Length: 129
Ligand code: THU
Image (tube, rainbow, N blue to C red; front, side):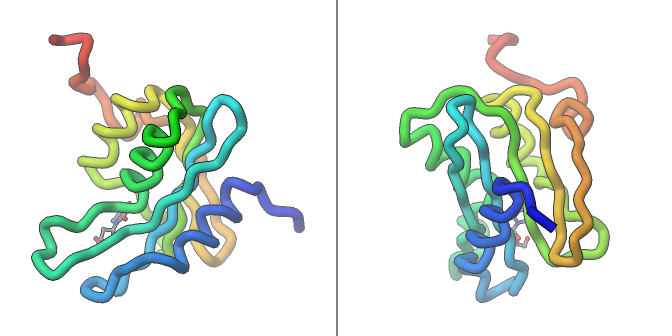
């Protein structure tokens, strides 16, 4: 069955995850308005707290490449209950991408589409400043 290229990209980059402490590998793929895909994996470090999630790596890579508006993001992990973005990633996604579609997916072929608005109700953002 042909797979969504965004989901394929999230699975592919998940293999690059540097998750030697948690062993929890995550891949993210972010599609910009021009149709370009920006990928990220989680990168852990020995102090734990400086770990960065796959979603934020994808967002920051995309911003750094000049992308400014986005359509959707896919998040791939190997959990039965689909892994959603953490709170910090929801905040960054909201501020950089707005109410995008978030595709949650696992290695067993389960996929669910949610809106970021539903993952982050009543968000704080620059409109308050
Ligand atoms: N992680 C992500 O990369 N994205 C998520 O959506 C959930 C958590 C990472 C952070 C850490 O490296 C590992 O998964 C365990 O929390």
